Length: 300
Image 1 (cartoon, rainbow, N blue to C red):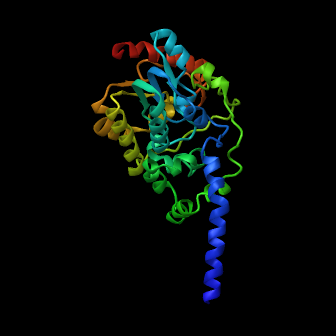
Image 2 (image 1 turned 90 degrees about the vertical axis):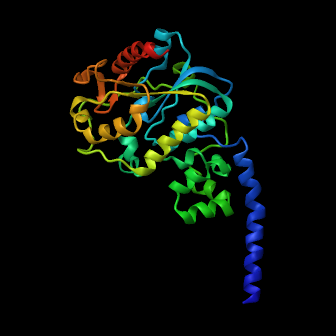
Image 3 (image 1 turned 60 degrees about the horizontal axis):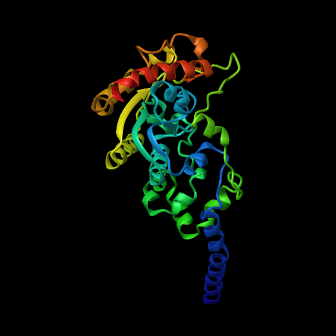
């Protein structure tokens, strides 16, 4: 038994000796993904008037160039596909380390307040932030979205996370210059006709999503950033079913901040402006962004 334990300890020591340097090498400037999160994390030295953040309903629906032309302000779109408020919070916290913002527009997103059920059971994209797992300041986020055994495995054997997601990243620097041109907006999003998908009939609210929405607000306050909520367009048939969600948002969150709803500035009954029931097409995105920019003049 003693010999077995000794051999096991030697094996563990050799494993750490071989893998820890590998993990350090990947973490330190050798980790890139092909998704927008990597582009956001690479931004440095930007002095911006505003940013807008949220899920794909920000990424696809809010055209920064259109808003800039209307307001004469500098902005960036920090929206990422299928992401919850925890992911937005982590991205914003990292972004603010090397960039400056005056105002943040946060999308009121029904799906992001029930993200575990709405975003395919994977609302926080762990594989986009593997190097950030090493940072003590982000431990709580990862602990909330990892099984405890995996959290401690990654802590004790750091290379494990890179082995698990080895098909999701590259060692070679990847940079999407198209996002530079659009300031982070994906305005060419379209789906084929007939592919319109309705959302679920009810909207729920998860405490963990509320937690990280509040963390994002606290982060803004700590950095002197003014917060303004927006609500990007939903097609009328979906929007009419969100009453419970809106009761919560009005009472707990939005009532304390300026808020620009799409209702009153955008015709959400015009199906030709939508790619699906929760995303605009290019035409709709540009039209909504013009109207949003006009409404924003009151707060600029």
